[in-house]
Image 1 (cartoon, rainbow, N blue to C red):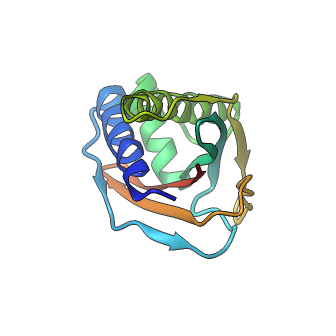
Image 2: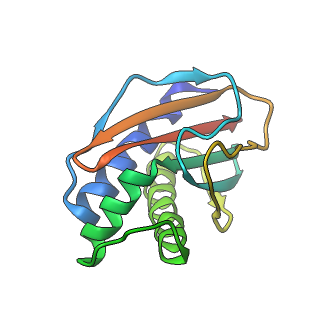
Image 3: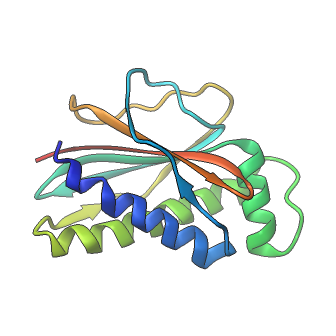
Length: 153
């Protein structure tokens, strides 16, 4: 996978969280993910097709997504429920859309599927390619989350 394809996802993630909840978002060091266990408790997975194909996932810890949704809606979110599921799907959709706009400027046009959202401790994520999965951890004022990018050209 071309490492230059990671930066649009990092930039898109920072932009979306800053815009939606005025969160200070700091990416950590990307790493090669070696298993399929989610790094959080709620994960959205989006399939991508086009001039490159693969998947991205956004995985939030329970603490981080409850805090983010509380700030988004101005009402305290206390548990993982359908409202949280919908919010994670929407956040991941916006990250995907912003990243794909940047990738298109780099000559890689892609379309995205509807996000699938999985909730639960220690759930697994299956990426649709056999290429390496690059994970990027993020820290916010609201807790941590991780995006994973797996693209093949």
